[in-house]
Amino acid sequence: MKTVLIIYPQWVPANLAGVQRPRLIGNYLKQFGWKPLLLTADSQYYEETLDPLMAKTASNDIEVIYTKAYKITKPRIIGDIGLRAFPFLKKEALKICKERQIDFIWIPIPSFYTAILGRIIHNKTKIPYGIDYIDPWVRDITNQNNVRAKLSQSVARTLEPYAVKKAALITGVSTPYYQSVMDRNFKVEPTHAGMPYGFDPNDHKIELSDLKYPWDNDIDGKPWIYAGAFLPNSHLFVQSFFETIAQLKKAGKWDDKIKLYFVGTGLYPAKRITSYAKDCGLEEIVIERRERFPFLHILNFLSKADRVMLFGSTEKHYTASKTFQCLLSERPLLSMLHNESSAVDVIKQVNADAFLMPYQDNDSKTDIINKLKPIIEQFQEEVTWNLDLKPLDKYTSKQSAKVLADAMDEALSKQQLVK
Image 1: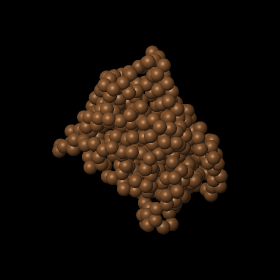
Image 2: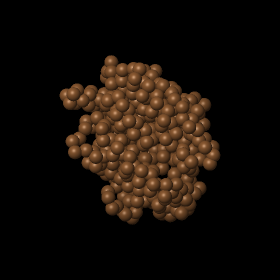
Image 3: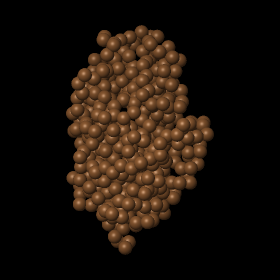
């Protein structure tokens, strides 16, 4: 069995989206001939609140090696764990590659800076490496007017070409996430593959007892829930959504028992969800809790809500990895996504598109509101929700693990031919 060294600076019990990538895929790699060996920083160096329940979701097949990181300073200058752990990850990775048979190195990003480790380790060991794009490194920040974001992108444009130049494999949650990387940096494309986060069906079988729900104090209410980070390119959707509800309320076409819960939205820098709600006179029915919730809490919240909401991005490449969580809750789903997002295809395949609002480039807020009105009116009524979840089999993390295993095999074969 071949061994892949996965370098990612956080691991369970961290409850971040990035941690899910090596966990979900690592859970199944052994079934396809690859032993996963994860190199990470010890959890004592993480900033985020830890989630002990996450240990229930990681397979014992994943061997984990921990290293140190620099602690957060006061004042906080560098928060990125990839930077704080960088020299320790580098030292330990080189030690592992010297002492053990490592066939491939796979580095999911962000943290973006760990991508550089692939090139550094390859230069010293000749072990082929791949970079996995959970998010684009060089990206559009025209809607972010802050010095930190601009500096980050300037660094990205400098470092990405160095990091990817000798990569034997480029992967991502979908092809559009990394296609521009290929176009910018390669005359001859390396092996590449897109595979979604997918989902581990075993996660959704874990039901928590004695769990407190955000709406426990609202006995007669009808909770609609959005769970997860509030994205920079979701603002138009949320603003249009609230303005549509305000118009429906004014026309007497809104059920006052409905409450809108936004949980785990994060400490995003732009205008607050609650501010948009206040602009529309909806502050009494919109509840936002920005702190991160344990992953298994979120799955249980979704499955017990009256309705589930999914606000994607105005960018077509956004795949909305939380789509699977929403669908597997088996609750009626209201979704707003770019019409070319791969998530739209998934939603249609399982017959969950009755309340889908597809966004098209250059749709104005008025266009969106006109599309949303009839959808939201109907979404309030009794819904017969006949999902066909069988098509989701091809989106499981097991299938994504197979895609990665096949891609690493192909990359190794190419390397051998070159030799």
